[in-house]
Length: 228
Image (cartoon, rainbow, N blue to C red; front, side, top):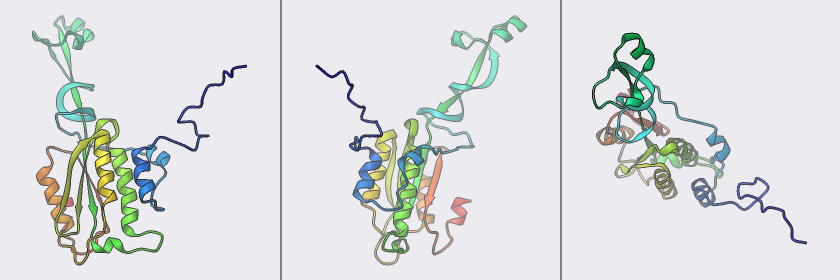
C-alpha cells in the first residue's frame, strides 16, 4: 500500500540537514563561541529615532513627502493629485476637496565600522577580541539588511581604511560576511584610526543613516569629535 505520509519540510526542526544560509556560511567556516544563535539575532531589531532621507523605498520614516503610512499634512486638492488620497471627512466638513500628504518611507543605510588593529588579536585560546567583534558585526549586519535596507562595511587599523560600499538586502549581508571571512588583525602598529574611518564614512554617506562602531577604543581618543 502506498504511503500517504507527506515528506517533512526543510524548515522542520526535527531535520538535521538544512539549506545553507548566509549566517551558516560564516559560522561553519570560522566557528567561534562569539557566534550568537540565529534565532536570537532574529529576535532583535534596529531602532532609528530620527527621520532619514534617501531615494530607495523602505520601512523607515523620512522628512520627505510621498507614499507612506504616516500623515504629514492635509491640503486642498489640486488637479493631478491622487484621488485615493482624498480625505473625505475634511472634504465634507469644508465643502472643498482635500487630500492627505503622507511621509514617505525610505530604506536605511547602515555603516558597520570594524576595528582590525593589532590590539584586536588579544584574547584566549577560545576567543580573541576580533572574534567577539565579528559576532557583533554579524548580528548588526543581519539586522541592518532586513526588508531591503542597505549595509556598508568599513575596516580600520591597518595601513589603509578598507571600504565595502553599501549594498541592499541579501547582497549587502553576503558582502559583509565575505569581508569578515578574510578579516585578520593588522600586523604592527595600526596606521589608520577610528577617526579616519569615521571621516571616510562622513564623506561617503548620502543623507542621514546609521553608523555602528565595533572596536575596543584603545589608543588615541580622536574619535570623540566625529562620534559627537
